[in-house]
Image (cartoon, rainbow, N blue to C red; front, side):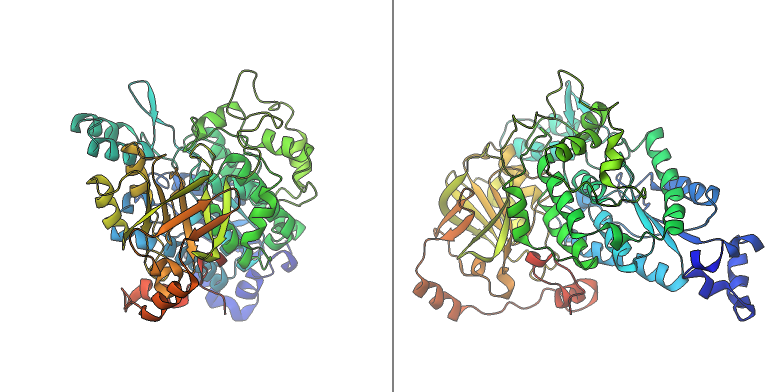
Length: 563
């Protein structure tokens, strides 16, 4: 291939003056002919830190094979990951959202420094997935994302289990519903092997969004982690990047405003995680696409929830895989006029062309009730609600399926951390009618914007799901459900109204009118504001301190490169 197919590697390896560069590359396996091929980075977030990513080394090898067989030269390397499930409910969870930025920065750094012409990015856990796409968008070199795939459910007493089952079992044990032996049995059986958390939690939400965005191959989002289909997907992705280099199709050609609208539509239809709001805003920023909170509201007015998937539904992602995955749903949404079919994708074809041959998969099998008919939705409009009001002047994000009701008014019970709230729930301090307030958990205040899965699971486990609500400037796991509102902005640590709340203040969450309000006069709010003092930073050195200095509001995606 000529240098026009090697826009970046040719600068590094062509010419007599680049003999030292070539010498270094020969030591890692380059032969004479390899210097004439486009170099394709294969970056995997493989790690034994978490089952979500424990198999990604094998997918990386498959992608390397795909690149090399298609005429490119694969250059594999690794990046970090952290496990939300393991760090959840601990101080370590502060690093979770931060890791998104670290991963994106590291991929950008390696590919930018080494002059690679394309990129296969492989992720399998919540933050490394949007991070991969952010890096692809920043670099804007032909590239593709490969999802590691979903885990199979665990099984106990003929009931499917996943990680959320364990968190909720903790609440059930605290409430005396189950004994220690039952808790241990659930703990041992919930996670049977590799793959991402099994419901429509953040990983599966983001894999679906990325496929709808056009940045992964068709069917990539709905495959089992341990399957021949997933290995083939990874291999095909390697070949696809070589093709994208030939066609000179770059990520920003794919990640258009219309493509992001497609992604939002799919997230809503699936009943996806609130984290999708945060991540899609960040991904759009990296792609230089204008996207804001209100776009979720506007799109949500016309898009129904069709899929009965956990955490609020009854099915796992493995069931979705079994009935045909995402493509039939994309085809339905396209036929209903809810998707932009002319968006180009990593196949080199449009979204409409990619789903045209979905006929063998569609319609879904008769008798299945996981995907509802378009004219008989679970919810006629979005479950993702963007709330405003005197408690959230810059917006907050709620996941309201309707099962919890659409409006809640109650007395505030205030906790200054996730740990304190969990103790209050498990020990019976939280009562029916309370609005639990967890503050100083935002991007700056945490720092790091932890997920409140432990408190929300404890609420459910204790049978309080319909009796209490919860608001926070932190965020939620995709596994959280109930009457919960997160991403409250401005956050408490920078002077947001959440920091001015007192116990027994009356709070109303109104998902019909999209309001989050405090029953308090402006005069009293002003008095409280005048008495408020900026808290001392929790960290003064290292990655968390840097993050707290650089991070934007959650309403902008909690990004760190907005200058």
